[in-house]
Amino acid sequence: MFKLLLGLLKPSAGTASVLGLDSVRDNAAILRRTGSMIETPVFYERLSAAENLRLHLAYMGQEDSDVETVLRRVGLPDTGKQPVSSFSLGMRQRLAIARAIIHRPEVLILDEPVNGLDPVGIKEMRALFRELVEKEGMTILLSSHLLSEVEQIADRIGIIAGGTVVRETDTEMIRQKYPDGMENYFMTVINEDRTGEIIHE
Amino acid sequence: MNKLIALELKRSSLGPYHIAAVTSGAAVLAFQYLLAAIPHIDPMEPDIEMFSSYRHLIGMGSIICMAVFTVLAAVMAARFVVEEYTGKRAVLAFSYPVSRKRMFGAKLVLVFLYTAAAMLLCGSAVEGVFLITETFFPLCGDRLTFGVVLGAFGAVLCNGILAGLLGLLSLWAGLWKQSVPVTIVTAVITASLVCQIMAACSWIGAIVVLGAAGVLTAFAVTSMMRQIENMEV
Image 1: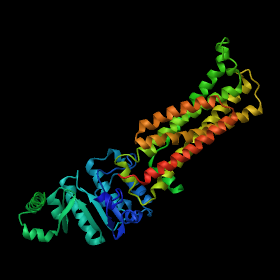
Image 2: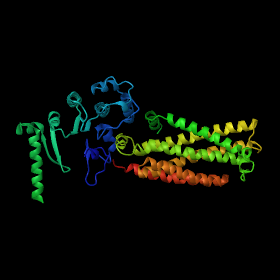
Image 3: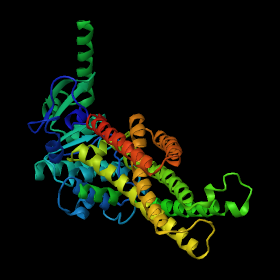
Image 4: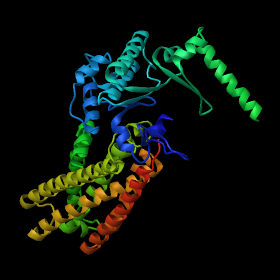
């Protein structure tokens, strides 16, 4: 779904739009106004974290913004000239998030953003995402298999089953109906979906 | 386009290609001396006439140089293009708000210009050194004239352009199969075939081969552009 939104895949039927723009026709405009992290992040391995970000900015057609500040925000303050090839999985994940936000996008699309991060990193990223939304007005669309994580970050949660968004609800409403946690809600939605399929068959 | 080429250069080091080009030039120079020395080493050699004429010696050296630089172009194209548009790296390449055609075009221009320029420089150095030493300590019995010197640099120029074109032609196969080995093997096969044709060609024949390679490469580039434009990752 994220790939469709970013124009990496073309819809076989129908259309996809981001910020009111068509994902195929207005692809360049969408890419300019969104930041993304999809699948395992890929970098220019022999370059440092800062050089990777500067290169990204150049491709995005932006001036060299404060790369060091962004690296500090994601928890990579002292990487200096260290090449990305020597980074751990967690550091690469942090750098991918830095790359997604450095050009100040309006929409941030993140696929499993806390994969490979330790508990401290997960907490820091959670705080960063909140800050981006509340202080910089960014909209974040993220996917995750970690239900507790989604519950703590998201304002609105959609569940995809069999390639379809089967339910989309405010997190607050879920909390009221399912005080025991997201897992019960998730299992209820999935079971309802399966029952619906069986009846349909 | 210039900005995109500059960015390509920032993210990839050309150092290994410089080393490969200089090493190839040195090897071709050594080989050319060896060819020129054959009449002295083995005076009974049946094809001795071929090794006793500057036209043939320089022609052979230049053609071998072209084959080597075709493979170098293919290696570079594989690194700059095939690897970039294969697997997860393609997601990164398509994540920038830059026209896919322009970004791809910048890579092709870089590969072509680098190969042609490297071959021109190394080939000129090889022929320059060879002809200077021939002026003072001739190995070849032929007469060294201004026409020979001019012909040598003409052959280097022609073969330099040909090496760049053949590199892009090999990329066509490599990109189609999305495989680095296919790119390089295609370059080896193509270079071997063109070497045979060029060795049997006159000047006019060589220009016809160059023209044909140009037309084929233009077709290949158009086809690759279409492939990149419609590529889904």
